[in-house]
Image (cartoon, rainbow, N blue to C red):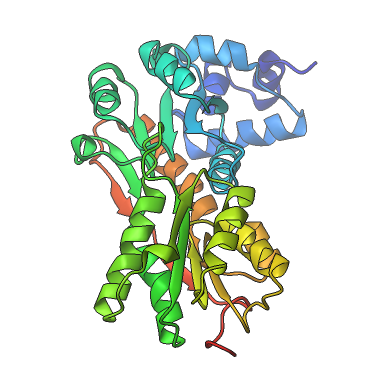
Length: 339
């Protein structure tokens, strides 16, 4: 097995120089750095990660905290994180929180500096006490992705999403096509995880209807536990009313697929009899040819790592707060009423 001593001998430098090159120290000339890197490649030298961690006094690990990481939108953000970290020396430690008990235990026993050099919080809207705890107790760089809290403004790096604007964008597309009977299928407003995205997308839906002078109808609103089957049941009930909607905006692509299944079970054609819009633009949306609002999910994960790595190099860097872009992707699931 090739050792650091072998690299040093072949490159004609000391062990300390090889170590500095591996740790990206600026105290090495470009000429020497390139020579050492060339030898490392030629000898196929793989550094001992444990030894590197001990020598640096770091964990060389980034912790990612998120709920229900199997949900497509959440996992796509995590894929972006993993992709960006794969090009670095850092390992990824995933904390999946999928019950209120796990969430409570995590924050009660949170000691991230012992296991990670930096921390990412993805898709987890924070409760007041959690935000306060992170500000008081976490002394490593932290980036929030779609996990905003008013207390964190100006204090922590954030990548945010304007879901109200996304809800308006989806609904306006249906209104522009000529639909006036537009339904909404989303999540329960009260939920133990404090998820707000569906609620905010519904707010955007309401704002678009109000701006168009179209009154809201109670029969055109349905909310339940997040999932395809639940959305299918809710949509079937909505589509069974006497004057059914001609279009439905679902708060996620997963729920939109449930709406499509409901339409098929009632022998309604999409988009001739019912137009459907989703949200997220996960891979399934393209497969189902679903019109949807695209979030930069994978890109958000990558960008969060870029910010975190800069913060690790410069703990005094200015706080970054960026709003992620949204885009309407029009496919075959929407058309003019009766079209």
